[in-house]
Structure formats: structure tokens, C-alpha cells
Amino acid sequence: MTLNVEKTFHELTQAGETWADCKAAYEALDDVTKTVLSDITLDHLPNCASKAEAETRALASDGFKNHLAAKSAARRAWLFAEVKWKNCNTLAELRRSEESTRRAEANLR
Image (tube, rainbow, N blue to C red):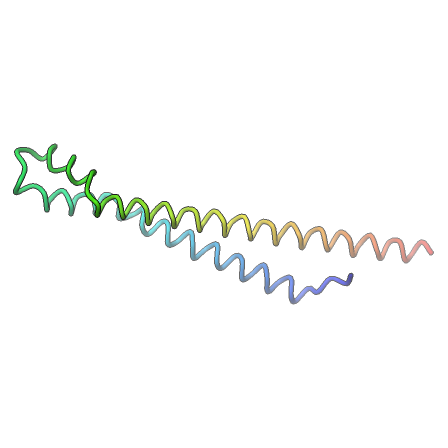
């Protein structure tokens, strides 16, 4: 098997870009977690006796649970994208090594 450098580069680039996009999506959700909690807490505040009660209700709210679920899904996508990039990189290294071995064997003949 001959190493297709351009195809390998394209696959690594594509996997790396997907990884970066997934990581950025997770980090964007992570960055706003406190803001989401604060917004929901403020929504509950008029109907609560204290800020602590409003925050407890906010933490238990569907809106905050949905945010955490989205954040979890984004983290999972990020991790799977990272695994794919690392696997592509490992495969490229194995192919490079295989090609090097093939050339070395050809020189021994």
C-alpha cells in the first residue's frame, strides 16, 4: 500500500477542524453555565423567600437541566472528535512507518 500524503493530510485536517469545532461548542456552553443559572435564578426570585431558594429552584429547573444536558452532549462530541483525530494521526504514523519499512526492504534486495 502506498502512502497517499494528500489524502492523509486532508483527513487529519478535517478531523482536527471537527475536533476544534466540537471543543469550541463545549467551551461556549461551559462559559455561560453561571449566566444561565443566574438568569433562571432571577426568574424564580420574585416567587421565593430568599436568593438561596431561588437558586435551588433554578438548579432543579428544566431549563438548567437542559443546559447541562446540552453541555454534556457537546463534551461527548468533543471527546469523540478528539479520539477520531488521534486515531487518524496514529494511522498516518503507522502508514508512514509501513512505507519506510517497505522502502528499506526494497533496498535490501
